[in-house]
Length: 204
Picture 1 (spheres, rainbow, N blue to C red):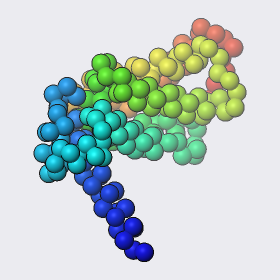
Picture 2 (cartoon, rainbow, N blue to C red; picture 1 turned 90 degrees about the vertical axis):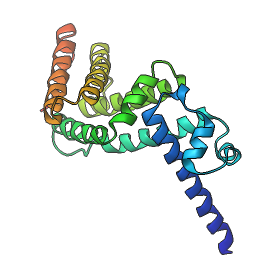
Picture 3 (cartoon, helix red, strand yellow; picture 1 turned 180 degrees about the vertical axis):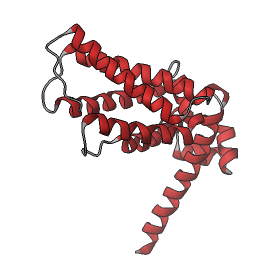
């Protein structure tokens, strides 16, 4: 009876080995530059075995990036303690710390999103979930007015661009970037209220 559990462990460990090898290559090369042969060589397995686990390079890429997306989503999950702005500050701190430790992976993902549908789908899904979290903290169960929804979506786009510049240039302290993003968030809320005085938000 122990044999199936042992085999399952072997399968999980092998899949992890292949995902790690793929993630390392995707972090340092563009998607088009990498071949399944190179991924197999990095993992120390045969190409047929790699195809047994992942039928295409795209499937391996999606699996590797999806793991990072889940990891990031857990990082930014609000604690529901303190005001919305305090929660946002803590989430941004955790988010930027993660990106600082995974700068290459994150930068490659963001650049790939411009040309690779699979990467774009993951980035947009992450962005959508982030917006849901922010709006839930600001509005509770109330539906946001269009001006607020648009302002938050615009802030998320600004945040992506600012973090990409920071990750590539590396010349701004993380705390300064966090403060810049918080200030931009406040500006987005003010802009939403200026566009529609019916927007009511208490961020504390």
